[in-house]
Length: 601
Image 1 (tube, helix red, strand yellow):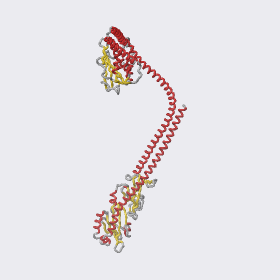
Image 2 (cartoon, rainbow, N blue to C red):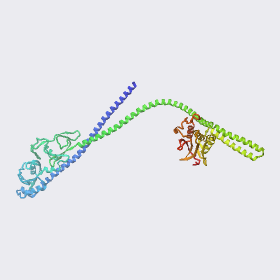
Image 3 (cartoon, helix red, strand yellow):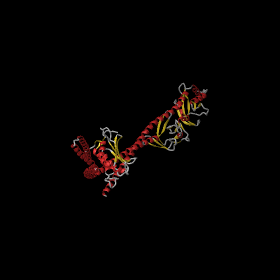
């Protein structure tokens, strides 16, 4: 119980350590991702500022370029002879010149003003006004270019005024040419474009913008209505856009409220334009920069989390493997002790099994030998008859030969002696086959003449064959059929098959016949032994030990076919038994031919 508690406490400590490590790692990832996001945001803002400065400069150049045309027009018109003549009191053709020039240049109006500020001629048919004491005219009287902007009551729209002085030949200023510019026409070509651009004057009033809702918005609505460069009616001014300025990035970031066409969060840039006495300003949307920074932070977090996950799993796997290795080593130590005991037991069992196998081998050899001797015992009566009959014939021939010799009939005596020699050879052949069959064969596989084995078995069983009135159909081959096996053991197999065939046919009224044949199939030698008996009741069990279909009165323990099966397998062959379609049983023994022998078909 205490060991389990200690193990549980160790597991809880390890779990707590892993949780703390994961929390620290997540905090580090969050900090790193935030740093990446801030760095990316700052980099994106720097790039945005550079692009915005270029866009603002381009928009400012476009505006000043458009207004510069009218400035130059005023200078050119001041040198025109008709303008000089008009200022000197001869206005013939002045109005027509001004109208044609205004139409060609797109000017809202062109005015000729005398030295005291009286309007002498214009391109329009409006009521003339007095220009004396106005800033732009005072500037022109001083011999410089006068620039002014206002919402002109005469034209009811925003205008830019360029006043160029008209000099006399002696040098003093005689009057001025005033070119009136329509700001709406200048502004129309880039209204609605990005980024948000607006131009403010020295009063802080937005006079020109590509966002119409910003026009006339004033940073201070209580401004003086007239200055040297601008004039407004206090009724048209409106508060500047509501915004807050954040400079934590080192750049002026505006948070704009209630302006649908202005970015909510924008980078504010400004550019001084002294030529037109204005300041160009731009608001650049920082949402793309913020999105890019968020993506960079997200990617950094994902990479760190993926790396951390892989590191965590690798560490966990290493820890698990270390624990498993420790458990394995402990189990191996325990198992080693068990295996040592089991090994000792196995050695004892192996010794016992070797001894048992030796006894089994001897028992099998004894069983095979017993089977052969049993077969010889069964055939003993026939063998005795086969030996007694020649002996009696030899005795009779010997007595006759003696009598013929006494009578001097040597030729007849010689014939009797020849018969005695032939009978002696026959007895010697029978005894030699019996002795070969009865001995225990200890040699391995050799080349054996299968036809000779069959002939020897038929000679041994000849007495029983005659006594049982069995017909053997066997034609010896023209040349030896050499197979791999043991001669004595192969004789025992053939003898068992022939003896079983005669046992199966015993007591039949029909002719008893055994057919023996040899054939070659697929390069292997097959021996066929067929009888004319009743056939096999259970072909699948015929090779089982102690299986027998013999009657109680017949000798036999059911081991003959089992022994034959084992012998044929030891030769590398096989034996099969089946019922023949025309009746009786047929056994097939398949053997390997000798490589050095010529197999007859």
